[in-house]
Length: 88
Image (cartoon, rainbow, N blue to C red; front, side, top):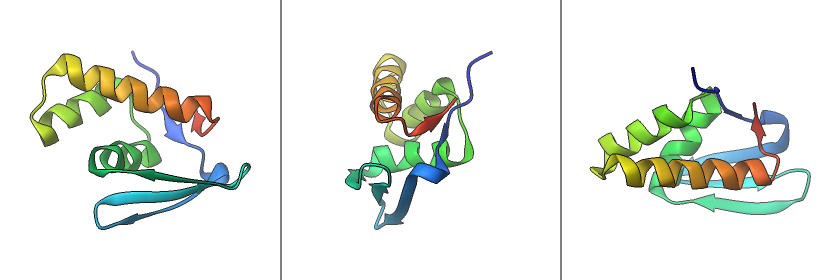
């Protein structure tokens, strides 16, 4: 069973605007943004999701192949984890 990932609510302030996400990493006061595919993953992570669920949603929403979706989901999760923005 895969690990369920979730955004750290205590570390982020964010809004979805016109299909994109704008956020502030509170501990570092850094502005972040995500395009439409990132916004899809971001909103899923705000509720909790596995990397497999993220990749599956990318395949469904953007009609990309599974391998590409898995790589994109992994890169997105890794970037958030590197900033300390995920609960595990």
